[in-house]
Image (tube, rainbow, N blue to C red; front, side, top):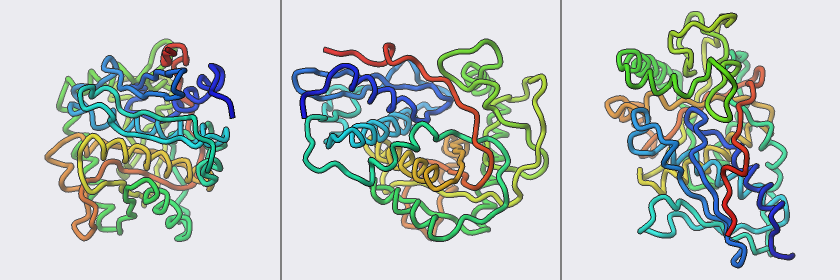
Length: 323
C-alpha cells in the first residue's frame, strides 16, 4: 500500500475529531510527517478548562478518545496503526505518535466499529427503564479491557451513592462562580459555533430524581426548553484505571471511546459525566471499595432511548498541520 496522501490523512483526522471531549472543547491538534508516515497528536493548550479540569486529566481523556477514533479509521482503511503514548518526555503536549505505514495485520474488531464512529452521540434525554442484557454488559466490559482499562456496573446501593455524589458536585458547582462562568463559555445559548455544546444538545430539564446528566443551562433561561422525567433507576458503569498518570488518562480515553462505539453498534445510547470526579473531595468516594479499580476516570450512563443531538466540529484545516 502506498504512503498516505493528504486526502486520506484528512479523512482520518476528521474521524478522530468526532470524539467526545469535556464541554466539546476539542482540545487536540495533529501533525502529519509525510516522509515517515507518522501522525502526531498534540494537546491544544488554548482549549483547556483550568477551573473544571486543572490537571488536564479530562483533556487527556478527550485526546485519548480522538486517538482511538484515529486507530479505528486507519484500520478500516486497511492500515495497521502502531501507537506510542507520550513519546517525548521533553514535550508534554505531544501525547501520541501513530505510525500509519503498516498494513500487515489490520484489526478486524477495530474496523467493524467504524460505522458507529459518526453515529455516536451523547444523549442527554431520558432513557427507558429496560434492563441492559448481561451479555451486552460483558461485551462493554471486554471493550474496556481490550484497551487496558476496567469497566464495572455497580450494584443498586453503589448507584445510589454515585447519584448522591453527582448531587454534591452540582451543589459545589452552583456555589462556585468561576466554574459556572467556565461552563457558560462553552455551553452555547447564542449563535452557532464550531465547538462547545449547542443549546439543542442540552436535552430537557429534569423533573424528580437525580440522574448523572450535566445540566448545561446552569440556571440560565433557555426559551422553549422542555421538562422531562428521567429514568428512576439509571444504569451506570464506572470506567477506571489502576493508576492515575497522564498515560493512564490517555488509556482511559481510548477505552471510553471503545466502550461508547461498542454501545452504539449494539443499539444503546449513552451519556457521560465527570462532575463528581472534578472535585478531589468527592472523587475518592466514587469508586467501589470491593473493586480492584484504582481510579475512576468516567461515569457512563447507558440504556435505550432517543439519540442525542449532534454537536459541532471544527474544520480539519484548523486541526491538521502537514510537514
